[in-house]
Image 1: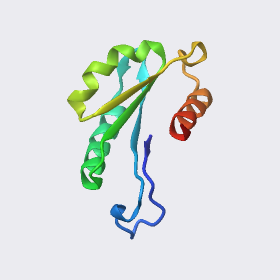
Image 2: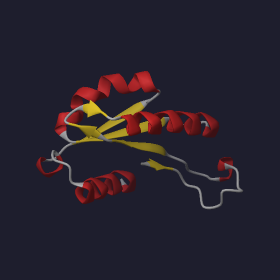
Image 3: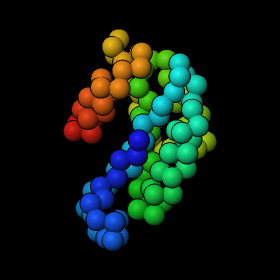
Image 4: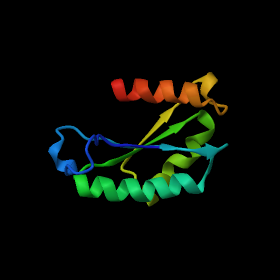
Length: 104
């Protein structure tokens, strides 16, 4: 769920030129789940250590209601990805949408 550019765990994270701490928020119809809260805690610590911001991605229109509350968990930027095919749980489609976001 958390994306960090780390290829060698012995290397400090500061050795990398570009780091994005990106967390995918898993939710059930707009209800945040516990695993996402744990990910945000870890992501917040990782972002602080790297001197970067924590970015959260919410997929599906029914997750829009979560956006205002994410700041309470240390999220500095929240991105909502919407499309008719993303409203139901579809992990492959979500992965493609997330990959497109990162590539852009």
